[in-house]
Length: 350
Image (cartoon, rainbow, N blue to C red; front, side, top):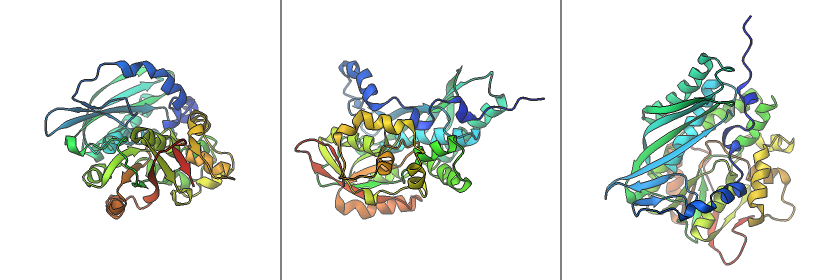
């Protein structure tokens, strides 16, 4: 009799972007790396915690390079592969670039998972790369204790079309491309409390490629781009604020949420990463009196393959929303604005 394989999520201590190292600890670990030499061709490095590195090749081309990988956020191997690949490719789109190829990063407990299950993970990733129009040109694999899958992704953009997370301007509007709540859904799934229709919504949003990126970067009024992933909306908004030396003000009532996640969060179905996120940066966030703890959990909820966060001239908002709509992002919404920073905090929730 064949022993059934364990659930993928039972093999990981943290799934998806929820397994990122906490922001405070990560900052401490990276303190010494800023002193490394930086060539002038490196347009974007680690200084502003941006989504990808960018190296200028010539006057017409800049190479975008990024990597992302994590442990399972779902139990279906094909879905896990799709989500991980979508998440990795997103960083190229978030810089305003077009992906050109990928390399696979594979770590699997080969004594626990069958070759067929591992193959389904790889097939899921390959299907997303095919949808993005890029090959998986190689990679590396190891035998590991926990299942790990992701990609190295490279892309191209004109140097003038690179959109960093550090170039927001006071007076800009903020637009979010995808609704929040993936982390809450993943917590509910792990505890077998996520309804089938909610799982379908989770897969739909986490496998939706952020293809509006290049078209958004082509709009003169778009000043900054990033994607919202493991540090939650608050964490990535703070990165944008720090990079630009500005303050961000977000109207929580306008932030789109995946259907049903507020109710799940109210039942305590949140990830441990949400609390670690708040511990790492909460002192830099101003909340209104009586702010609902459930809303705070969603504000810091780690998003796996989350949406683009756009900082743009207010007159450009209709064009930005039109780009999102053309690419099938119907939940995209204007959620706040950028202000000149006169003092702390750098992020205000209204």
